[in-house]
Length: 209
Image (tube, rainbow, N blue to C red; front, side, top):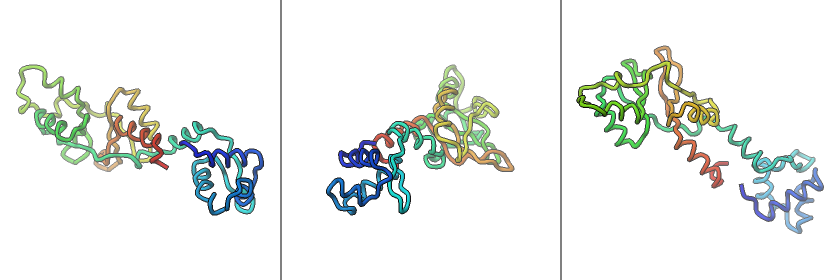
């Protein structure tokens, strides 16, 4: 987050004089309390300052990098998951390739007859199946998909940074967001490397508070 010159001046004043009231900060800057209110709100919400009723503002001592790190660690999968693209076990490899192309995704999630997760199809899986002389219309995806327990999954309340680490460690493009059901695992969303990249770009652009 990039601070304005006035916000930087406020931080320096609080560093040197804290705890200090908003009125006293305004007086030192020769401004009104109302004029400073938006800046103080931003600095408090961002974590640079802390405020206590009837006492005033304190400097937290945290750098911008530390505050950014803390913010990222608080993000949960539920805030950023996307709609999952799913296919049934009996769908042909040809149709799965068409679905992946039309939906512009890198991973498909395969559901069994109960509607629960039974497999995952990556670009590599479909490319591997396409090599050779076999008729792709006659090969069902359940033959080539990656099956449980070799599927990496996450849940809504998982930390986004932990999921990002799993994507890197497993060298996969995406994973299903699931919830436990008496029939199995129900797919409720997806998280991909593109999801993670978008979050960091928006964060850098200060679009995420």
